[in-house]
Length: 438
Image (cartoon, rainbow, N blue to C red; front, side, top):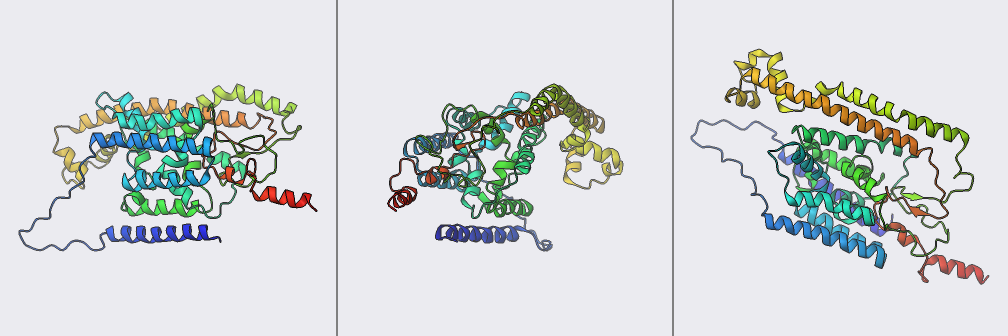
């Protein structure tokens, strides 16, 4: 283990110890004692919302971080510079801003604004959603490289990455799209912001959350020491959008600044398996069997869409239980005695309102119908993603050089360090020169 890796491991272990201690301290180990006194517990206070002007400062910082990263990639070609900008990004957007405002979760704000007339998306949230996608169309996933605290905190803890089997990568790679579809469905029905609720690193950034969420975040970081960026690669729904946008990027990080000499030094440099290798002549040719598979998958696209829509729509009752009205209506219908003896605050609050059980059931039925309709769209979307994933397996592209995969590359710049092109002092050139003198 080198010095740099040892330092990163030590920092991670210290952070892990602090988080577990903080989470444990927040658990109420014993019930509060009851004394017959007139003392009243003070009300819990929360920090006031951040001033609107300072939220625009966040947008400016986001643009500056991404702009500086673009300069470091395309002009300076400096992995070290990208790393330190990323450290600033996680300190500012992660620990200082406590993970909010967040581009990853902003998709939910946008969807809720589109489907609910009573909600207006803040301009800053809209900016955080749009700007990284716009940059991805022109320069790749710059946001992932340095401005996303969720991604950067995983990047920092990488110690000894292992390769994930290609078939497993492709299978797990479907989940971000499924997660994105679920997040859109739950936001459109005003049920929940599940991306924010299950953000594994928010408890780390805020140094306090529910115990199981802190354990989840630590689990991702421990896994990330060996499977690089597991949340980014196999969970992140915003990453699914950036993946698509980056594939159309006009410019993108390149491993070499000039012509590739196929020295193979960058072959194992990427911990995310985002480097495409050169193909042989025979590998880039489709066989008759491949052509048949391609035509079959094209014909089956509508079938995948309809089957997916039917399957998810049929599960609308299960999916809608996350909505408070549906959950409460189901509880009271199954347990009518709770109307006389409220077991929890939700039931007590409902009984104190002007709504009747009939009104609650009617509202729940409306919500369920939204889930039934939304289930068709979600299932169709999932079916379409599966169909295109299968199609991609029988599409062959000829490559003569090592190059970064535009969709999967996080623009971290590691591969640039390994490339000897344009670097006279690179050890590769010294070895070649020494060999030529023999």
